[in-house]
Image (cartoon, rainbow, N blue to C red; front, side):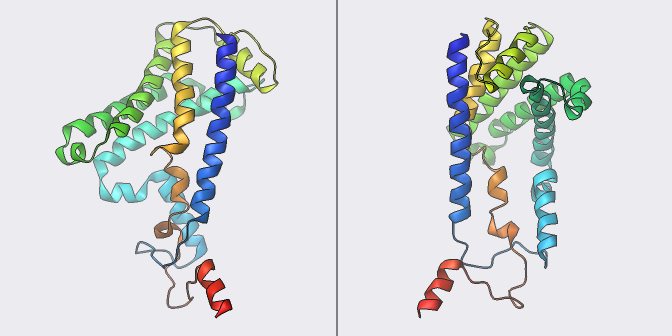
Length: 241
């Protein structure tokens, strides 16, 4: 089990990092030939940065468009953020101040993550117009995340695992040293689902956060009368002409 997960986590991390870099590079190379900010849009680059920050942290446009979906998404993402910060302790030799700060929120954050996912999944089935546009991948991604959340909460509240040994395994991996992983079936299921998520994440709809920063409707200033918008490829054509 130790060797299997050591190899699986190494491969998953490689796919995750390489896939993420490839998709971000693809977003960066995609041309934006037109000036198409969603109005009302900021007139300055500082305003654009502020707008992107609100979108990334508060889901501003989602709040305006669908308050029920915004509420479900906020419950899930806030819970997920705390859970991810807490999991950093498995890769640190000493627990950092941010991890220590959110440590008491372990169970509320885990419950919020699972509840948010359950609400988002229920919405896919219970609202007819949402059900019509829902594909199998939408359901599978939510079920995968739910599986990770439920197995994690089960280890936290019901079937405890040796977290000291788990931490030793992951800190050993970061220093290229193989240390034994507890042979707990629930831990094995949890880690297997996490590896699966890391492999599919860069190629799925879950990769929406980086895409936000490359969206021309969000990252452009509303100044077409003051500054002529010229895509790099169009500028090269003008130089030749």
